[in-house]
Length: 165
Image 1 (cartoon, rainbow, N blue to C red):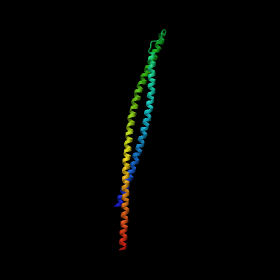
Image 2: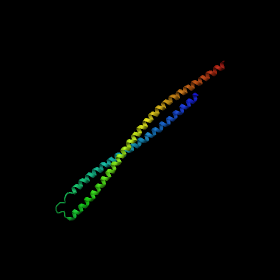
Image 3: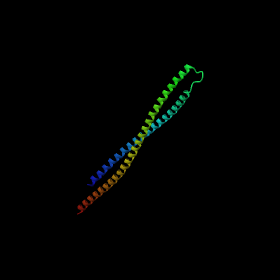
Image 4: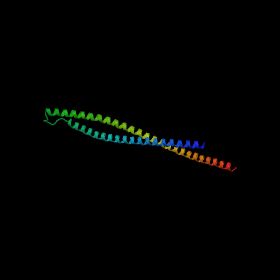
């Protein structure tokens, strides 16, 4: 009976060790995903900042171009200036739309990163709980092994006493 208990405790320890390993691997993978998401979000923020600067410069340029042409500028020059102004306005609008899309993507990455961090924390807590269970199972395994040895010793003593009698 003690042998069965010892085998059961050993099997429980093995199962818990495997579960701990799986959780550690999941936590590691989630941590790597969180790092990648942070790096992508940082790159997007940098791109957003660069685009914001470019957009601000374009707005300033458009504002300067919007001032009336200098005297003697004449007809064709004014028409060409207006075409360039319209093209710059279209570029500015396109850049503004891209900024909105990038900001939404960066916000999504921030949410994903927060979710991954929470998952890593949950997995870490799970690993700690499983390690505590494993420790308890190892203690039970040691106790069962000690009981098995004691039972074997008692059987041997009984056999010796019977043989002597």
